[in-house]
Image 1: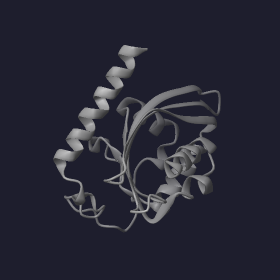
Image 2: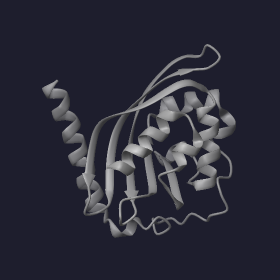
Image 3: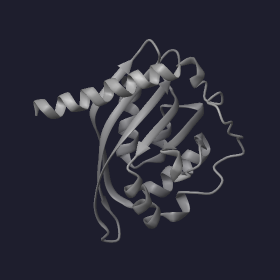
Length: 177
């Protein structure tokens, strides 16, 4: 969980260098749902994207609400709240996301992040920092399947089970609070 803590701390730091520390050299980030049309970003493109997004915040915190760790598969699902203060008197930012993170075999680096975002809030952010939300992310060709990311090792039914478990945990947490 040190790698996940480092990733979340990197987001909260608003420092691109700190965010990049736990990322593998061949890291990829995908913003979902796909209908948002955001490009898949390699490590370099993700750094540029993060710099743009970080640049609109005076302060920011990524607060994990639920973490599901499948150490055997090297996959961690995180439901997080994102709180911050926007620059230029744009107000407060309160959003949430679900990130599915795939780690290296030794668990020391982040290979991939699939980040499910609130579509309406993503469009709101695109209005604040439009140059950082589209365009060409890298020269990497993205295939229709997931072979670029190596996600084929985790079959679709496993992802469905992770999703169901995650939703159940969130529901249980809300019932108990």
